[in-house]
Image (cartoon, rainbow, N blue to C red; front, top):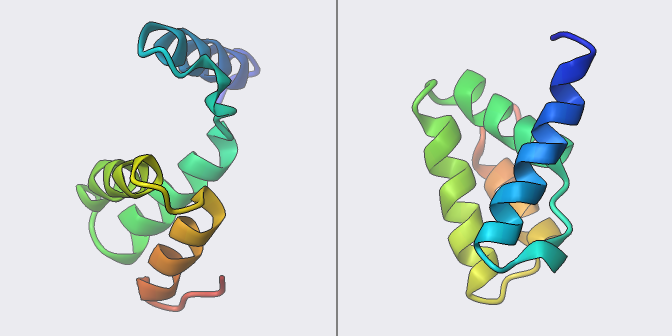
Amino acid sequence: MTASEPAALDDWAARVAAELGIADAGVDVGAVLDLARDAAHGIARPAAPLTTYLVGVAVGRGIPYDEAVARVAALLPDATA
């Protein structure tokens, strides 16, 4: 990862959130990427975007983000969360 990638991801997340009208969502890019990495390595690569999407849907329906991540993390092999 280059030095500019984290800033680029933060900028991208901010732009997408603004476009979707959720600029106040407070996206934790690192946490989302960690979840995606764990799903990709623990299940299969395609599980990464699917998992993060499903967590997003759950959050949109009212489950707190930390709870949604913890519940999904508990399903992953060798879960430590």
